[in-house]
Length: 413
Image (cartoon, rainbow, N blue to C red; front, side):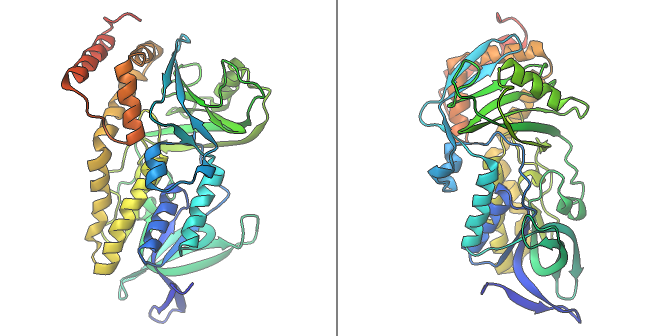
């Protein structure tokens, strides 16, 4: 609390002052808050609490290492992926040189918020309402509705003073709507999943160390479906850009097909998932977006945890310079640096999704490509390291011509 200061704005009452107010406590917001307080800034972390995003929960070794995720948070360690085509052709892909960690977002997100709090961030449970400004002081007033606890039904209005705001409040970000021009996310997939008690026995339909990715219009007309282990539970879900699609019906059919419909449902969750970064993350003066609000979810795979945390880390680095040098120009750096690191991957994955996910015939050919050992190596090494793996030019050309053969239908399926 000693980091919190008070400022008097005109003839208003005294308000608590924070260098930065972070709105949203998912991986992006919590990481931003944590990096900021570690740099010595005062931070308010505002989160609704009790809201869990539908997510397979996969985090690569790069995220575990870079953001110091403790082993006890990993509810499962995946060493194999199974890709399933519309005609039930199955391709098993071993994960070499490590594993993919699985987390339960309920516990994972709360741990991230608690870490930020332990390092100095002030936490508040509440909902963001709006921003007002005092031009003479060049400061922002953040208005929100607070509660004393998650279970508390009573709420009350509060207001704090700050120099900068971080919008980490998801794909339907209220901060973005109010502060960033043309911030409507154009490319979205609506995701729905159920967290279910794991079956007692391992079978061909379920393995505790295997992620299943299912490409079939029976369960998704334009994306994919999944069965991801979470230790004592698992996530079974699907995604689609078509709002009229029956998500619950698809999952019901998928559970029946996998002989999992007798397993107890723990919770159900749904939310929009962005698949393309916004053209602008900041308003040029005092507000910046991170995570889903900024659109940093990978096309094709829907992977978002690592990218959300990275966007938060990059935003925090820029905000420290903004506060210390009193210069908002640095707000443009996070998007520029993010795309420098991962823009090429996002572009390639976007092309992959726009072509191969269009119908079951193309999905069948896509899964056939996944049988290639070079493709498997490049795919998972790039996923694990979060960079495009550099291999010999001859090998890349070989993969390129194989892909062309499938693309034009001259390869056997």
